[in-house]
Image (cartoon, rainbow, N blue to C red):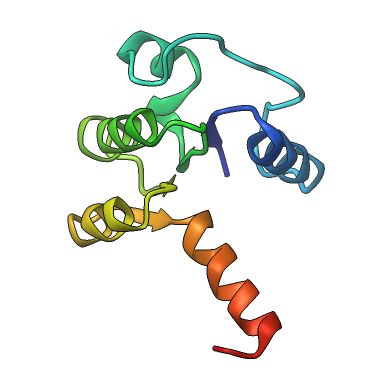
Length: 118
């Protein structure tokens, strides 16, 4: 499975390492592409045209959303997952067909469960 990850912070870097160790990205081995995640040429250089999955994990909701829409609609990537911090925007873009994950909502849910108020 070839995976393109936008954002190489803690989550992106950790996932890249895990996928590499499991042998998913066929040629990852540390390849990184610097540039704007919404630039078509940068996405092509990162391998978007042959990607099985695209993960938008930067710390910027707008960049994540735009890059995910490009991956999904322009490059027809089969699996696109986008991290959106704003719970309201998360729901809106999920309703528009993006597969979203909201760490804010996940964190709140987990804290509620720990407190037993869930």
